[in-house]
Amino acid sequence: MATSRTNSDAVVQVDLEATVRRSSRNVLTPTRFQYSAEIATDIKKKRTTPTTHNDKKRQNSRKDIKEEDDVKNSAVECTSGGHAGLSSYELERLENIKQNQAFLSSINLFQATEELKQVTRPKLSKRRLMRLQAAVEKGVPVRKSLRLQSLTLPPKPRETQICGLSHKRPPGPLLMKPVNMEDEAKLPSQLLELFSEVSTEDRKELSLTEYCSALKNMKTTEDREVIVVNKRLVCAAFHPCTSSLLMATGNTFGSVGLWQLGSDWGNDGVLRFEPHTRVVTCIAFSRAHPTHLLSLSHDGTVRCMDVEKAVFDDVYESEEHLKTFDFMSHDCTSLVVGYFNGKVAIVDRRTPGNSHESIHSLKFKHCLLCVSVHPLQKQYFAVTENKRVNIYDSRYLKEKKSKTVSQLHGHSLSIHGAYFSPRTGNRVLTSCMDDYIRIYDTSAMTKKAPLLTSIRHKLQTASYRTRVSAVWDPKQEDCFVVGSTSKRHIVKVFHESGKLLHSFVDRDNVTSVLYVTAFHPTRNALLGGNASGQLHVFSD
Image (cartoon, rainbow, N blue to C red):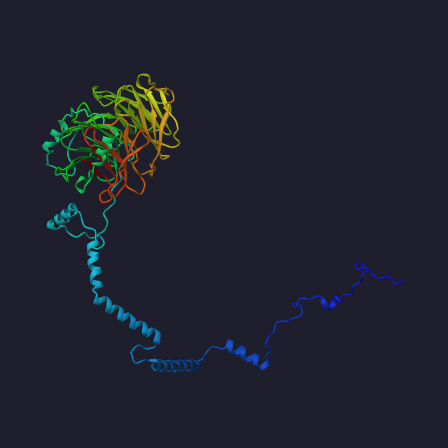
């Protein structure tokens, strides 16, 4: 019996040669034009033989014929409208443009745009107009470069060593000669009267509601701003007099400026002096002697402006860089001076000479950016040492590695401000480069002061800018003010709980960051200084 094969046993015969596709690379040959021997020799001759003079004439004649043909063609394409070579679409477009211009001129749109430019153009301030008119009246000559005057550059003067401490003012008293006035000009008679004014008013603290309403009434105007010192402003302070607003500032070139709001001293009520040669980092009025203004500079000197004597007295001098100071006694005769290298010096102004009573090294050898003395217990002072804030007792200081009384932890970057609260000293306000403002409880002076409040605020600045620090309002125990480095030029007032009480914003007058801020000790007034040496005053 025959059996059928299964699928697995089936044999399929495939013609491999017929189905397999072979590559054509070996089969196809590139096509090449094959010339005869005569044509090939002619081509080689054409490539190698240079063109003769007759050949050039033939080529030029061909070009002339081609140009004549182009001229004929362009002449044919000329239209009746006078536009040669334009299509109907382009002619229609030109006609539309003419009609639109005629319509715009009929409605006087061009004249309206010119009038709008005149209206929206920024107006010059009154002070600027007065200066321009004065310049025109004086006939100020037009400045020309040395190149246009056919002159050569003068020899470059030899640079003095400003970075070193050898470049100082001569020791001893310096006369108060304003650099922005004539040599023979005398100091204003009202200056001594203002400095001699003693404020006997002891203002009581206001409730938060009353305090906020007082802040809202404080405004600034164009008349309340002026450039007090040239270049970058570093520090500023109010004089405690109440009859008028008197302010003092220091800049990066060793200048000290005085400004009375609304006066006509010098330039716009400003008197400038140069008692130092380098940056004036700290400035303060004496609470016991209102005619004294103390200033500290990087040139290693502390000087006292004595308005009664009309001199800058020499208070303290060092061969090293100085950074900050504060009063250590109620009569303001003792000072604590902070060094760049982490040392502190105790200075007594009653001692003859300009040296210190004692000098001490603290626990950490870092630059002391700020020193603040307790308002009641004057033996305690707080210092900022890099990323730490430490409180020391001046009675137990040692020559090396003095021990701390209390430490304020929690900062991650450099700290450029630490201040005791103005009335009781139960709080310490710190400003850190990590963009946080912190308030600590220092009522018990424990080994580790507890953190009460932490406020996020923009504080970071470039290394060549003035540091932004929060400072207390001397009239309120629990309120402080701080500028902001954000794009919006705002000065904010906070409560110690972190609540924002008020923001000073004036986009018409304040157009820059106010790095330095300070409240008046008795009046409702606030000052703010920018990087150009300009002061703004907010008052009621």
